[in-house]
Length: 64
Picture 1 (spheres, rainbow, N blue to C red):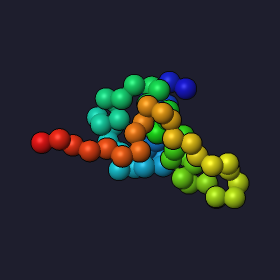
Picture 2 (picture 1 turned 180 degrees about the horizontal axis):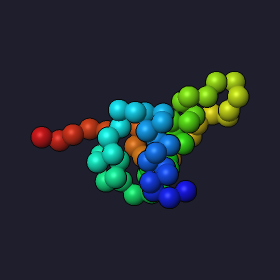
Picture 3 (picture 1 turned 180 degrees about the vertical axis):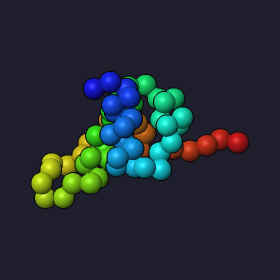
């Protein structure tokens, strides 16, 4: 899939995601997000458990 196709697919699941915002991310990050959105919109009993990738932290904090 091209970057634009991934963005279009993301916006089908999340219409509030702005084109300018999504275009800042690389193709790999967009595809991971699309994968997560697809998982979230499918019935729980039809798919195996979603696994978080190691490069995405479970908890994010901000220092001041």
